[in-house]
Length: 129
Image (cartoon, rainbow, N blue to C red; front, side, top):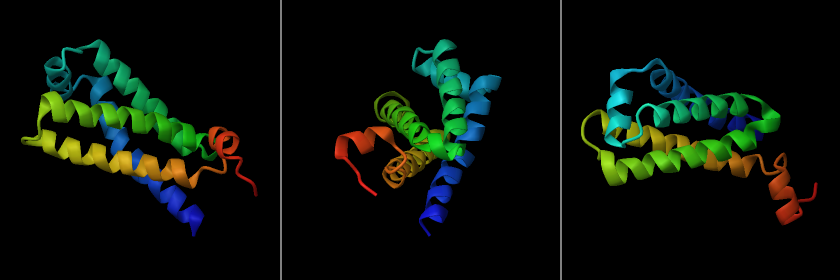
């Protein structure tokens, strides 16, 4: 059952992140507008797009899923902060905000469920089998 939960969390995050990084890296008008509003166009858009791509790849590998979850959580905290401070929640931005919350929740849960594979957790908390 734990394995099913683990994979479900990772797949949900990956399914949300794949179109997100694709639109950022392909130069979709909405992504350009978003990062222009943040005064981070084009460098910020590419940086976040490649970071999301790395997150997807890391989440799909069981040994590195904890690292992908940590990277994804950091990215999503930045996205949520951007929505709260600059972008707002109107129209399509509201959907983006909800999806960022969903990915953040999946990443945080994955960090917790993969604590036995996470060298940081095992050293800090001395987790024993």
